[in-house]
Length: 211
Image 1: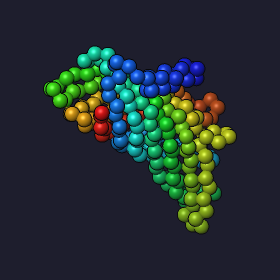
Image 2: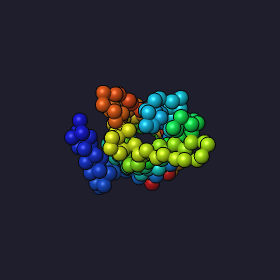
Image 3: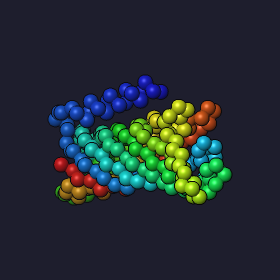
Image 4: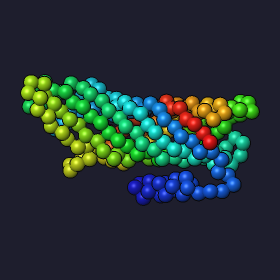
């Protein structure tokens, strides 16, 4: 599986930086991202009632149009997510803050529907490879303000860095402005514990500028 994912990275990179007759469109995108990512207390690893990370993303995409209706978009970008919830530390009431920085590489098939001379509607879908760059949980107890920080990708790992997702969405482009929304569903197990299974999912809303 990891070999296939690395191959996907290589294909995406080669498409992104290649030039040719079919290279059509460069896009810069920014937006909101929310990920269903069940939370656990650390070090006890008990599930809590705040399963969503929220944040934003920034990416660059390149679209290769093979015809008026069909194309492939590849990209590279980053995503920052965070959340906060009540917890306990050393039997005392505490607050937990979590944050994560992720690199995303999508490879998407586009079905374009021309709406007018200056606008088009696109349906897209494909794999999205994500890699956790940093992630941590910081528990601060309320009485004395003492904190404990736990890295997600330490040894032992709380979560796994690599995640493969399937993503689908819709976009509307008017002249150079692009509005988009989509949903992604995790495929790989990202739980760092032996014998445990955890997958993520998310939604995103974005605004882009295309050249």
